[in-house]
Image (cartoon, rainbow, N blue to C red; front, top):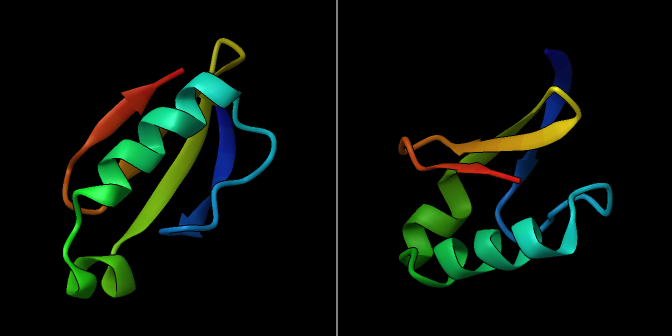
Length: 62
């Protein structure tokens, strides 16, 4: 596992593959305005694949 970083809703890093970025956007589109301002994503890399977890528990794997 490689340590990654945290990023805010609407600020998906360019290093994330396009397919995963599209799935992140789908999740973000379903969030309330309050959630968009308070929740953040955690990005880690597992076996060279991106794994993102939103503070509310949503996990997506690239």
